[in-house]
Image (cartoon, rainbow, N blue to C red):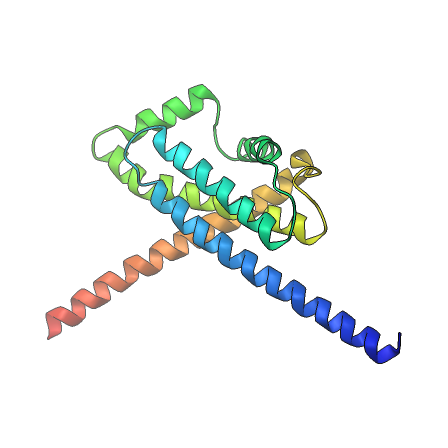
Length: 184
């Protein structure tokens, strides 16, 4: 193989990885939005089931993108371990969380803002962690959730920032539109 052939092969692999990364990021973004919308479900515990389903579907799609065999059981175990690092997933924690949501006015605001943002941030973090693992040649079967906890927490915080920026941009556009309408 000539030096030019090697250089072209390296460039092709770089382009392929760049395209896979782009596809993965699009999937993560789309599923994070779906999870946020699923977090609006006003039925306690149902929003959790909705988010879990969306997250599993996203990881399955990431598996397809990176051509990795998907193992639902392995992924469910890993997801549970990772989410437990940032969310009170014990039955007492989730019951308290859901009951707080049912408090008049305060609970409604909490449910409309916090739960969708939390669902989006968790989904974003899971997607980023699994995509990085798959991009490095990992599989669902050799995913070490314990070793990925620090990375997951970091991506979760990044996901919360992105979710709040998204909400902030949406909120900032509404008053500007109203001001323009009032001036007309």
